[in-house]
Length: 153
Length: 409
Image (cartoon, rainbow over all chains, first blue to last red; front, side, top):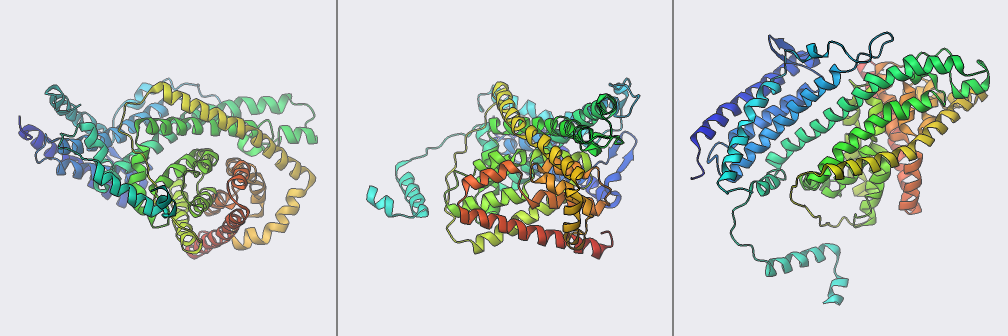
């Protein structure tokens, strides 16, 4: 097996463009709408650190795109792994923020200790990073594939 | 050979080490592993800086989510809705000085406003600081265990060289974001007195601890980014000036960069537990003492006197009301307590921002102050204090001028 994988290159080229595009849209949203952000159906962009998330997505997209040549070369694969970890961090923290915000019932007197409708808070709309998370997990397949062939430790 | 080495400067010694290594070590061809590649990619600026931004974002989001979950989700309710009304009703002698000292203002509706030893004095360290400290040390220990911190040091080496420091300086800086005390202690490996002095001064003046950050998160979550930006500007500006004016050399240091490894949860738990308990044992008595002193000063009228005496500086130079004198006094003991006490004072957004920045830089907490005395020579210590005073007036004055210029002061 060489260092080329057409599927890997094409997949991460498309995915990289997607990540980059969403990052740019977030940058546009944060520069025009500020913290309030915007929402389109099941997709929303907003929150205090939107500009930070936007920058991370833009960089992750660029790193993915720079890794598509000779995709299975360990140096190139390493770049894709780093870009995927960046998405996992952002998406993971989004999920963490939802969990942490959904459980308490509220600080006011008379409210219950735990939110009885906490499951409802997990519904859409979601940030773009949440949608990108499962798509980024494909990198694990390539890492596993090389590991199986004894080319990585 | 030994005699030659003694006569060499530190930089010449490293050059010698380099030459010996080149002549004696031979690296053959080998296929790097994914772990090697990740180690490499995370120190190269083009990929390493974006990754560092993501890591810092994750650090912050975990920190604020964790602290918010416990503080806003549960502790505020426990203390404000249940504990405060209960202690206000059962503590004997309402209206007496004893009641005022221990329970605080009898009409207070939150523990932020009450200023009592048993109300603010317990709520602030347990309800606000504890979750922040646990969250900080949990993530810090994780990054330490994985092996990311030395890579961050390599990454920022170039930037910190501009102010006469090295990448290693990021370790005391990050440690100080947890607590200034271990941060100052971590300056010991720095090679020259100049570097140690600069680092201790910058930590003592510009780096807020996790407890302070937790307070800010509760008090001014929308302004916290601006506070950090202001402090970062100060860190680099003052560092740059100190590097130019303070005599001495800034030699290179050699740092071990271990390979990435899987974190050991037991290690992380132990480190977090030890550091958190150490922090609490040191902080809680100061919190109680701080509340006691503030309450006594209110009762005796000393606070009003001090407020009147400092009013020209506070209102004239910094543009904040004289009521901020109480947090300033408490800040000598604990700066996080001081920021917490700002919550009980009526301030405009700009005044709150200015007050928080001033409280961050105006004086290190008592524990850090004592450690500075131990770690620095007298000349250096006095210079640190001078830097502190000048910085407070320059920053406070500038912020006031900016506020006036923007029409928001």
